[in-house]
Length: 190
Image 1 (cartoon, rainbow, N blue to C red):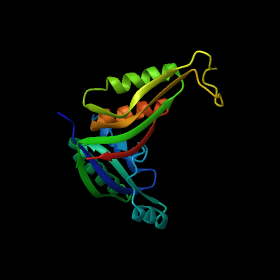
Image 2: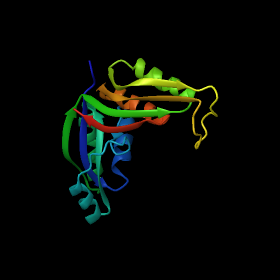
Image 3: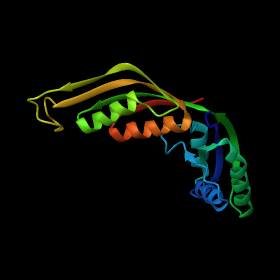
Image 4: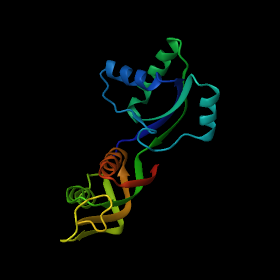
């Protein structure tokens, strides 16, 4: 069964909220993962939130993704932060259990190509890959390797499509594909 997550939009003192929440959870022995969606490159911030941050430079709005059971502990952390004299409040929250993304990959290293091919052909449990552009590998014997301006590369791998499934394994696959040089677009939570 897939883990449900909650996106919590919180307003806190700049640079304090997320770290305080992580510390609060760890101090209670809770190893729940707290993901900052901006750092995961899942753009969630609205224009209104950007304006709010400009008008109040000492405060920030953060979109955190936490496992649903940890939401109560995060609310306690926000309350404790307020008791310490810092502004802290949950603005909204929304539950999710699935994630999806589009990807495009073009690699010129056999090692990276092998890793990408393995990721796409045998995804982690809870992830489904749909190839809209089949994996194609090209091998050229006389070409000069992976030089940046080489007219031909000795190896090329190209593929494109979508990935979807449970949030944690999809985000893990996105991170792995990005580390290989894939372009990831349109990440959505549902």
